[in-house]
Image (cartoon, rainbow, N blue to C red; front, top):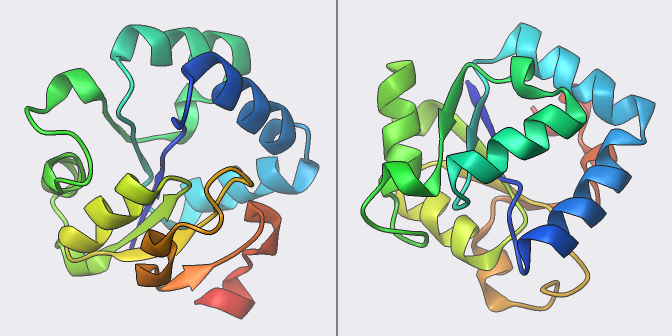
Length: 152
């Protein structure tokens, strides 16, 4: 299995600041990253440019949790095109059917589904009602709602 985590939506500064504060402030979220790294081959797939992602990694120290990075400047087509997720699966030498995508954005959910992957949606309050979320295999309010016992 493969865990993807996408960290870009809306304006980069606002959303990443909001997401990182809520995500990294939780001990359980750090535990999630730790367990994810032990049990899966985690990749981070984002539409943002690598230079901006490097800044986020510098501020948070979470770069080591990901085996593969795919950024917006590595692909020709943005989400909802599946190119970014297909590239990550290819880099990890796994089939799309073995991948699990964690997404917060409607276009990312569609990209994951278009790639033939399972998708867990974690919608922000700003996009919660978007119909793309109905295509996700599971919708949760926060990453804290995900447990191996409950969801695997």
